Figure: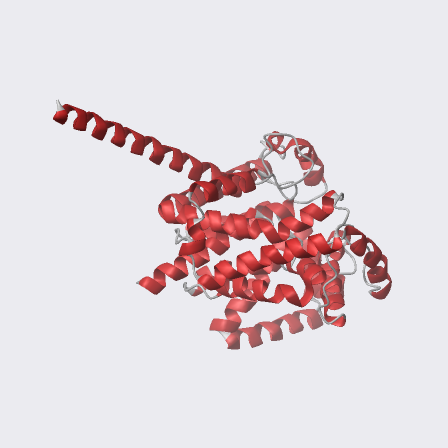
Length: 419
C-alpha cells in the first residue's frame, strides 16, 4: 500500500513538473515572439509598438521571482535599476499633474529596459538555444514577408498592423521599400538590424545577418538603415583595418570631386536609396538639407545632440511642455532644419540626453560597452556595432529589441567569463 502511494505521488509530481515545463516554454515562446514581432496588433491601439512584450516580461519576472537581479553581473543590474529609478524621479519632479499620455511614454524609455532586459536574461537562463532559434526563425519570416511585398503585393499580411497596414501601397507607390510587419520601411530596416545583432549575440548562424542586411538594403531600401550599416562598417574598419578607413575617406573625397554622384543619379531610375546616394556624392550637405524625411530624422538628431552639448547636458526632465517650448527655439537656432519631431529629439540616445542630461551617461555607457565589446569575428561584429548605432537615430530604447540585444550581450559575457 505504501509503495503504491509513493508511486502515485511520484507520478503526480512528474506530471506537475511536465506541466510547469510546458507552461514555461509557452511563456518563453510568446515573450520572444512579442519582441520579434512588436508591431503586430491583436487589440487595435494607436501606437506603433504594442505592449505585449512588457506585459509578458513582467509575468516572467514575477514567476522567476526576480532571479535575474541576483544572477546577472552587478554593474548591469545596478545600471538598469538606477536608470529606471532616475526616470521615475524625473517623472515625479517634472510631470505633475501626471495627465499627459506622452509623458508616460517617455517614462517607458527608463522603465522598459529594466523590465525587459531582466526578463530576456531570465528566458536565456531557461533555454538560450530556443530563444536563439526563435530569433533566427523570426528573421526568416520577416525576410519572406518583405520579399513577397517587394515582388508581388505591397500589402501582403499588413492587415496584422491595423491602421498602419493601410499605408503599405501608398508607401510603395512613393518609391520607398517594403514595410514587412512594421509601420514603415525605416522601422522595418532598424528592426532587422536589431534582430540580426541579437542573433549574432545569441550565437546563431551567419545566414541570419545576411538576410537582415538584404532586408535593409534591397527590401526596405531605407536610407537611414543603410546609413546605420555604413557607420557600423566604419567603426568595424576603424577597429580592424584602420588603413582601409583612410583609403575609404580618400575615395569618398575623390568621388565627390570627380562628380561620381551625377553618374549615379543617371542610373537611379527612381530608386530612393540610390538617388539619395547620388545626391550625397554630388553635394554632401543634401543629406540633411534636401530630403524632408532625412532632414527630420538625421538633422533633428544632430540638432538635439548639439543642443545638449551647448547646455552642458543639463537635465530638462520628462515634461512634454518642456519639449514643446524648446522645439521652436531649436528650429530658429539650427536653420538647416525643415522640421523636427513634436514628441522629442528624434534619437533614442538624444532624447535621454535632453531629458536626463549627464545623469543618463552611466547607463548609456554601460549598456553600449557591454554590447559593443562582445567577442565575435569582424563580420559578425559589424552587426553588433550596428545595434547601439540604431539608437542614435529615431528609435527609442523602450523598444523591446534593445532589451533582447542587451540581455544577449550580458548572458554571453557571463558565459564566456565562466568558461
